[in-house]
Amino acid sequence: MKIIKKLVFVSILMMFFASCGEDSSISSNKLNDPQPTDEDVSLGINISSITGEEYEELSVMDKYRVANKVLNTLYKGIGYKEFVDANTGELKVREDYIEEIKEALDTPLDDLEDIEDEVDDKYEFIYPDLQRPLAEMYEMPLSKDYFDRWMAYQLMNTILFSPAVELETVSFSDITKIYKRLVKMISKDKTINEIVYSHVISQENWRRFRSPEDNVREMMEIYLDRFVDEEVPRAAKACQNWHLGSEDQGYVLIRDTNVNTEPQYVLDTTVKTCTDFYKALALHESLIPKVVKIIVNHLFSTYPEDKKQDIVAIVLSKNPKTFREIYKTLIFSKEYIFRLERPKTIEEAFFGTAGKLNWEASSKYFDRANRPIWRGSTQATYAQMKQAVFTYKLGRSPKVPLDTLSFMYYHRAIRDDLLTDIKKSSSLKDGGIPKGEFTIIGNEENTVRYLIRSILEREPTQEEITKLIDIIKESGYTKGKIAHKIGRASIVLDYISRLSEFYFFKKIDTQMINQNNNTDSI
Image (cartoon, rainbow, N blue to C red):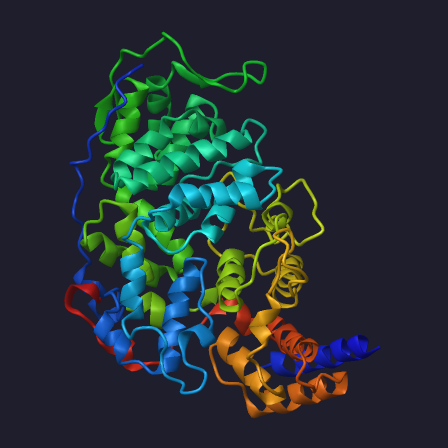
């Protein structure tokens, strides 16, 4: 009865607070160097990177917010008790923590193979191609190897590189092929042009867009924003000897001997063969702008189109050659860190908070949460949230689905699988928040203050303190033993799971965003 009473009371409280064979090599030496236009100068976009010195000028809480905004974007997080000394309130980590994060993303791991072996030992996968990449990242610390995988994961959830496993012509092994190719090429700092070319000529790409006509049309639209209908039959003619085999043939990419020999004018040049067409596409001046546009659309999904165009223009002015350059420019920019407000993806919200609470994944977590769209689970799945991984033909929507049904599953995953999941045993098969996380938490008020400060990155209001303490006392969790500390924490974490602010990246109110730096601002 206490639990029922507690949940009814919490639900009422939530409503109260809710109102508040051909040559396949390619060179990439034909890029233009676009510049922002003079008309954009007055719009106040600031893509300059936050520096260590600027980070040090922030308050302790702003440092904490900045660190976690970057870390959550990378599916990591740091808790407040790891960030400050609980007794003095002073930083426990070095003042240049943001520089530590940047440095970590440039530093290779020494024990990568050991981590990969550990993933195999700890987790059970029914669909390893689909589920293993996220489990691998969960086990890896921030590093160059981690960042390579994070970028590959990001890109494979966009229209650019989606494996599209919802299609009958696609197999799960296609995920691993695309993922490994991206990770390998990104790790070697191959250019965007080279990586795109490698992908568009692959069997995995052709399994998504099957006929010559469909493939060439989609490639020009997806990678170049080019919608020129009269070019499609010419490009298809160049690719006349490429086609996807039937189901009986295993949906293999077939390149027969019927190679086109007639020159075709397409993409502002003359091509004959299919590889000629793909080279022209990968080296076209519109490729890098479209790639940057897609990445900006996902990271800045709530920005109006004109603002996103301004951001794209500034990034292009830096003449980026690699995905690493684009992502590091954006996620460490003052625009992203200080101004951005948008819903978090399930990975950003879940694993960012998991890092704050030292949550541990059970052996079956990744299998149960990250299942194909046609399979159910005892957990809320990413597919039920309409955030399925590597699934959709055109990639995930840049905007996180927040319709009632999708968000119901999103909230259920956060509440049931993370915030109210306490680890019951020391077994690797059992997951959740370790009981030891709550041993340092003191009385009712300290519990409220610490958890809201740590998870929501702000101080609790007096109303929150008063009402949550009332709920804790009504539930009888007033003693110092660990069971009562867990009970107090569970009530506060249940409350946090019901606040809309939990699911959003928030602006960080500081004057730092007004410090514009030369060419990085327009």
